Image (tube, rainbow, N blue to C red; front, side, top):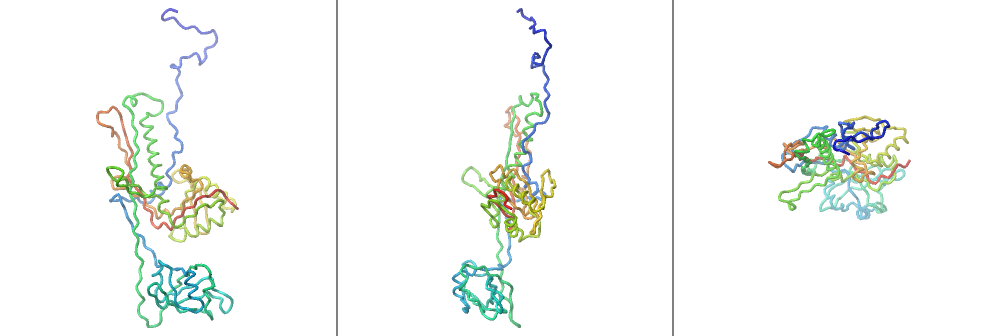
Length: 405
């Protein structure tokens, strides 16, 4: 074949397989689909309340409690009291729970007439961990033999009484407790060469595409820290300190139920009774893994209380009403990604605040490449943390495997 000679093909109709690939125009979308972009529901809802600027990497707050309303009579104290003795030792750590004038009700001591009421004890004094009482301070005709109670018993302070013309009550106060957390630095960068950026591409240029991906990843990383973060300040690993913020699972210590297995409605109500015990809000956000969400859905169907759905911030919320309060349930796929499909985190959003170190909330930093280097480098940077007050108003359920009617 001479130079420039044409290549002959068969005499049949020309098909796409006979057209030079370089000449074929491709139908390519200008959009690149991202798998699971909505992955920061918790941060979205926390930011719905006013954000707060922190003036330091460590931010603190103080929490107060009312005086205790219960104390424990252990088996030693119960045996010592018997049916007539008037002194007993309090359990270690409960030395200051009672004061003169308190009335203590001992549950489980009611019998039949004329002793159908639980016995009450009137505190007349205490010293060095020993409490003195008047027995049977109520309607009963005789004191109960407390030595027959074979297990530690929680007793309740049901009020105070004072004689006419008595002096003022002894002062008593509960110390406030300091709580704190750290702000954590989150960074996500991407970089392209000058040549790559100047080359036409189908869809968005890589620099723009990576910017969108890194923005979503940045939000996801903050979300995961706000769920699983454990507070830590490391001053030995590098030239400068490394701070890690605490998330929900680092704060919640009171209302934790583990190895639940198949959950039923009765078990859920028992757990919710404690979680809704405190706080003004009658609504909690329930972040659910896939297995936990399935159990709730089956539970709602079985109670003819189907979910009412609503979409907020492109997040589907399924509302569940219970006798203790309402749950705004979300199938939070981030929990599945972290191996927590059988978990449910119930949060009182009124107690959570998004904190950012002043001037260091999420910012986009373009063109941070080394001077003279033929690349383009951009970065997202945030220094933030979560403040969670009164963790007793939230709770954690783990190990849900299904629903049991």
